[in-house]
Length: 316
Image (cartoon, rainbow, N blue to C red; front, side, top):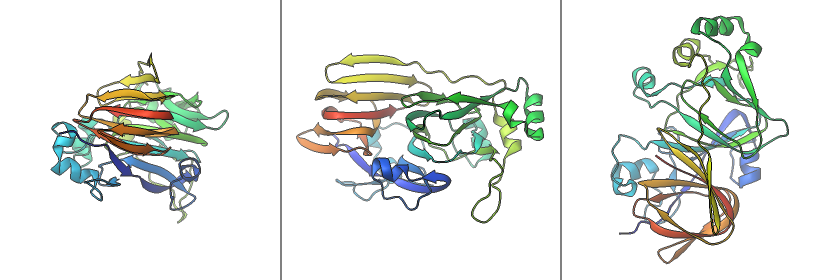
């Protein structure tokens, strides 16, 4: 039995560093002018996606995973493994680091670790991000953190639209002001905050830092996350492979006319980040506006996309 595409409604979250780009660029109905995150394809209990229409309308992705595992090729696991977000860093995010599966499982009530990656959708001229650190030993890391030598400790990298960064667990990192990214990550919400620029929340309090956990989990010395970018061009589409790694593989589909494709994985997660088009499958046509997020489940088989659009696509 062929399965139809499953379109999802985004879950939008306010953040101290958020802005209005999720409304301005994607047309989402944001809750305030400090909206920082769109949890676009999520089965995490802190922000599950809801099916937009079709036979599963109104059900959460958690419910589909628990009760309709055939949609995901019958793969095993106690939770849906991936999470797709769009982040609007209107201001600098806190400098942070994430644990791996083993540490999170032992210290965060069985939560997954958090390896992630970023595709830079847009950013201001001269934008940068924090990616890694300069400490050569763990003792040096502790000394620099305790003394507040953030300028000496943190590595800053210039970024531009179209860049891709792989961010394994244990990597100190932060998106900086004026950056809009699509993030593909393990389904985890565990973050250890290292530095927050001494800013205060709406109640006048500085946000909690997590030095002990950060020292435990940070990779020392820093190791750049790899990316195996390759490009395949065929009529109607250019497929860029950004990374094929332990937890996920991530691609960009650049479509400029009608293209025939096939879904051969347990599932594909798809997000339209630019342009628009339509998807044809099993005699039905589905509009693909900018900002649409959908899953192509197992047994989707062949489908076509027509239009001029760019999608970020991932699978386990």
